Length: 100
Image (cartoon, rainbow, N blue to C red; front, side, top):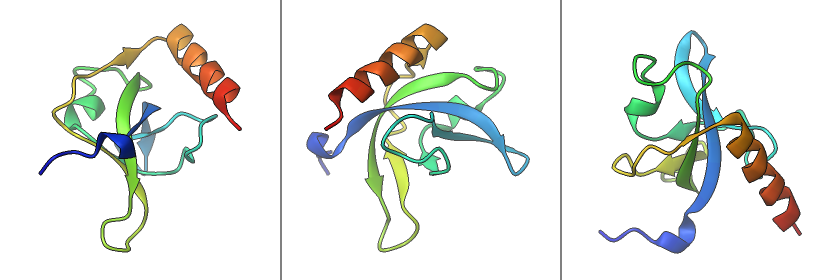
């Protein structure tokens, strides 16, 4: 099955503790709620590889898998793109400029 690249968009996400478990969630200031779940590579939530609070840039799409709860999906085979605080601020500023 071929990925529809037009359905994917860049999203800044971060690792954080939710309910006692490390999860990946969108960074506030984007079109997606920071409470929205993100399904992506488990490497991003591995605190041995990336400390808690690490930020990443994902190519993700919004889906609901047959009418369920909406979530963001990012292909697990994509490379890990770690964002610094400065890069995250620049990404969010660019996003705000591009809004209609």
